[in-house]
Length: 434
Length: 82
Image (cartoon, rainbow over all chains, first blue to last red; front, side):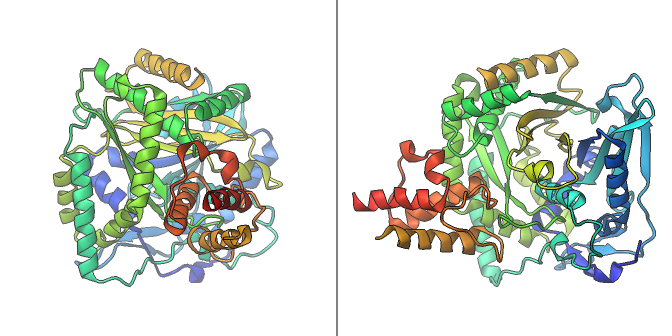
């Protein structure tokens, strides 16, 4: 591989959301933050595909960059950034034999990634009877969000990957956010956010914060094409006007609130939902969490019909977009990069009183079609396992790939046992397919 | 206001605020194809509220009304003329 380190920016500043995730992870739970990892599972149907992807990963400039960076947070009033070190760490592919295990019971899924201690990108291959059947890419969430991960996949599968020697890496990295606004406006914005969050967080939020073992499990449920179609139709019937996502979220909220009631946990669901801050139609940036959040509070969700929850979600979404909450929240997070980590951490914990979310939810509904259809080198099937975080200890995510929906759950074993989980999945299926 | 003028306003809004630099969109192109997602549709609805001064009623928030710029312009035009 040619050394193209001269192409990389000397400093890649963390976005407000990157830094927020990092500080939040450190502040909320010392043990669980090492598992804030996005895992992409690619199905391999022929050996050529596996060889090509592995070769591309080994050649990829961005992989090289991710393996050789260090987080720096120098002084007060300076922003944290990634610094590229000399190109010493090369990608190691780890091979595992599936044997009698189920895929997600393999030990490497429990392997941590530590900022500044271990590489923040890894590749594992799972073999069945000596032949590679899955490729698993693991990326620390502080480096990249789900949308960035799907851009990265597009890069890996692009037709022209090996045809040109790439010297344009500009779409890998975020442009530094530099709004020309005064500190006065920053402070005014901070008070808007403070007031907004106070209204949302001061109420009784249901959560699993008291139960945390930091031992997690992964469960993936695939829906077939007919079921996926039925769920799509149901979303429309239940009033989900802006796509499938609000319906899936409503069903998840209802189910989780029912779980709270079963476990005698009082309060209502409160959850932040990622809002992609990128302009649409582009191919980057790949690096950084270019996200802000929308915040939903659904009262007595267990007693409501799914239609009513969908309606409330849509109302709250439009109301917050009308108030420009995602942009203002982003601006607030950008500002918080300047203050010392410990102070930021203290403020987060004080403001949230340890109540960060009832559960975590993400949906990659409108992503990754390109990887399936656009390129010569195609993914047959894939799954994105969301990061594990405790608290809140349960993450639900949905992915549509090639017209088929999958439900991916990552949960703390202290919250749910196997039979409880299966019961939840059954109830989710009933609600989605009703 | 003519339909073409509404289309122009919508195109300008999308190219300036929603789409990445240098991405152009035609009025009959499917918005999904251009990379727009559900949040972008909500942004368009809010733009219509601000620019044309009316709220699209719930029963008109249908996928077919937000498929292309042309379809949205027709919807807006119908409201403005009524």
